[in-house]
Image (cartoon, rainbow, N blue to C red; front, side, top):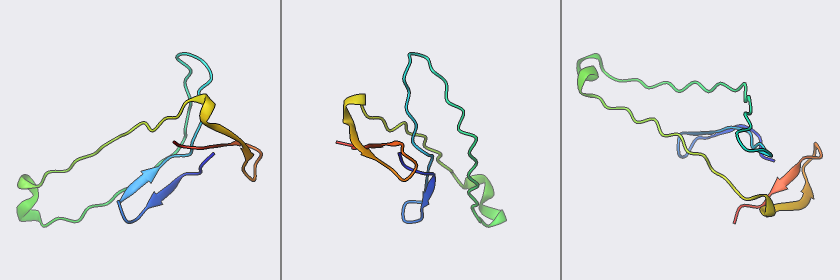
Length: 78
């Protein structure tokens, strides 16, 4: 499993990884990430922001036999 982290090079936030075992299963992440943008006041109305949310997934068969330091299975993304 991966832990929540920020990638400064791409200005991206990654939540912790989690395993979905059942159809329509819900996972409560309880994570917050705060991004801040500084723009000039006179350009405020012509400034466009894009917020992209991606669900990165892997099939259950891609879970390796290795475990992390907490004993959680390690995902092998292929």
